[in-house]
Image (cartoon, rainbow, N blue to C red; front, side, top):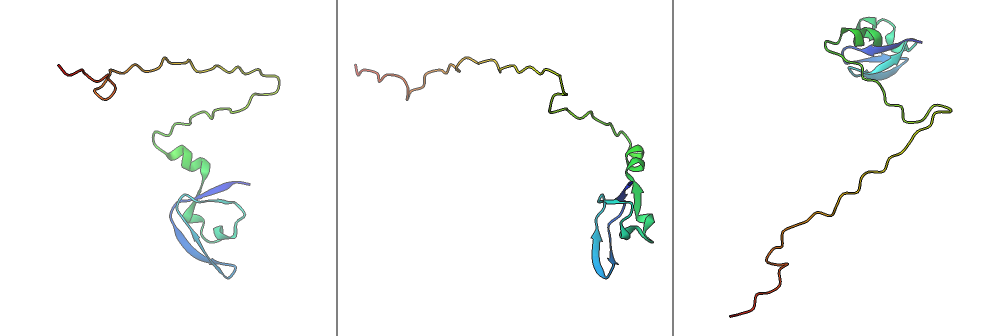
Length: 96
């Protein structure tokens, strides 16, 4: 089934029940909300192709494919941060 994207928000009565569809909401092609309201919707493919400057970023694969070996590297340990001594951490000065 194709998926449609709502271009403008609207409300309607569908099968006796009120229904609100917000801009950007996705509905399946066979949804009764589409009947008579086709002008409010566009295909997702149309939306993606008409967006100026739209760049499709590859999705990072979180798991290895069957037979693929993944390696894990440990983060390099950093040396403890050296701080300058402050008055509260210095030894008390002797009175002269």
